[in-house]
Length: 328
Image (tube, rainbow, N blue to C red; front, side, top):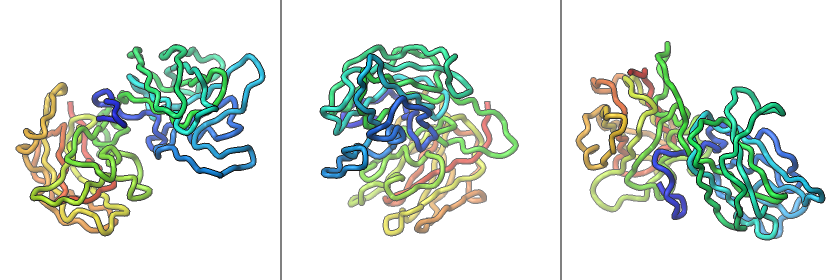
């Protein structure tokens, strides 16, 4: 998966995504721009000529100019416990007001960090460029739940993104769970096209907030259909499938079908091999802007670890839920 030319670590998602539940718990200062903007999923924007009571409107978190020897910082609660491999410190549109240096610390705690929390440095003091997407490698393999982003000495950051893998242990439950949910370790790993919307949106919690919050392909002008391959967070028996076309009214797919397989945990998934996976759901008609639930329509199948969701011939889906029970 690439991000404006940068190849992200395989199997990683942004654990600092507010849509997954990440939050900024504390900031030493947020005079010019609030800390909550730091974790927004939408790309930062520039609004020329727009000012508020504190000065120029900026899309990010920005502190006032420090007049002492200290430095600013904020504390971020990640979407869940995970191992990080790459941080993105995005300073787009911060040109004369970005921090020249940052460092990042991490901790693992079930409670909100406090003065007694022991922080471990995972990124040493590093130089930043203004108006730039700065990528910082994380050599530590420790599991963490919170980050502390330190600015030296002050300034503004548009977005913080923390790429890694959630560490989720699914166990047997009385009710089926969404084995594909990003918060349960599910991951979209390949697709035919994502011209209008990212495949990763399919596995987010809650319903979509707009068409921009789903997966949408270009208009297909050749034979065939579009597809996305999802690796479940844990292998399991699927009992029900939910396909949500929220906000897709003139561009929802005509039909959906699903193929599935159980692969070894370390298997490299080939899109060509996925063409021959057994059928889990024969083509089913879809409607605009609604949740479709398929239970009795599912074909008999053993435990699965991966699915290929096909949309015939193209279009957009907002969410895919694969409800079942995990197996060993």
